[in-house]
Image (cartoon, rainbow, N blue to C red; front, top):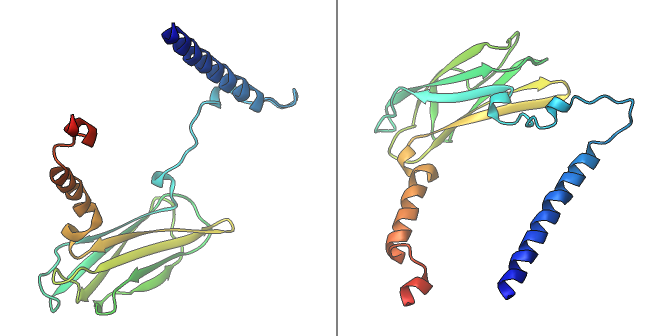
Length: 188
């Protein structure tokens, strides 16, 4: 008898939730009769994500040397995804003990167009596998009144980054806690 009451209560709650959500979805799309809305776009998702960013930025290195005394050439690439109404500004972010041998650490580029790929070269010393260091490349420009930008980062020891270490941490925790059973399951 009590199982029927629980099932009836859950079913009633589910029905009220579905009908209530449908009612509020329709009422929020109501407006004056003179306003025409395109009903085919009511379920279209809002475009979000990095593919719509003004710029796409990446950094590549041919090789990261073993010693701080060795030179390495970094290649930064900036792809312009949208039209914008200003010059493109870029800046490399370098740790204090990294020295520039060749290339500009920042500049302003005029006349950059949508679809253009800008390639930047920077030769440095002090960026090696001896110690974890991060180098970044930031790009920005104005679209309307807003300044928009993005950046990329390169680690000298990618094997020591959080992205590389985190998956192993979960595996290690599972091994230390047992086979993944709950404490209740182990006690029984």
